[in-house]
Amino acid sequence: MSEILINELRSAKLGRITLETPAMSEAEEIVVAEQRLAAEEKRIAKEEEKRLRRLKTRKNRK
Image (cartoon, rainbow, N blue to C red):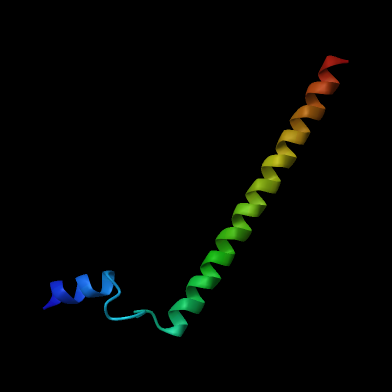
């Protein structure tokens, strides 16, 4: 029975069914937003580090 259920869920014979609750979806959205924010902060820090290295290299050339 479980194998049939899994196969029918995967093939969408049972329709559109979600196993998450609304609270689970909200929690996931919060986690994703935090991860995006962290990635953006990391990208900005990396760009700033590159900019500082370029400035330092220019100073050393003079």
